[in-house]
Length: 191
Image (cartoon, rainbow, N blue to C red; front, top):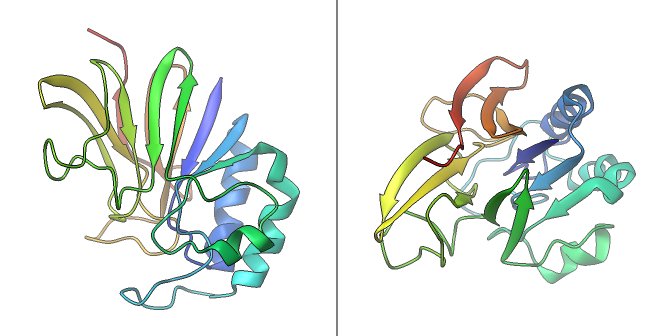
């Protein structure tokens, strides 16, 4: 089965529309949002076509196919206007026989080994957004051999990266730009 991962929409109606169009073309069963959906936050510039109310309306028809975790820009008021749960700090997902620890990345991440890494086993996947930079790597952290994935940012990419999302197809995770150009790809097969 296919699953789409996206993060850091930050209220951009233009880029949310592009992402949803890619979702429909991808054939993915579910859309997994890794936080920072409606607001840009004080550290980011306004994204193109900043219109949080439009983003709410764009996402509403997909509510039954969206799984979501809270980003550092989400607040309780967001849950009042979104038709799907968005306030969990993380979600454990078993997709295609692979364990995914899905989170935004501002609390749980691989950046400070041992300090913010969630409990994981060999072969598990930590997937998060927050940095706005695509990542698809296998890493040895805290004595565990895990995969670290980040689909990048839908609306505010950093470090010269493209506006992007990720697709899990079987045991392959591929990060694409909005025109389905491959940015990075990795096999999540256990050794």
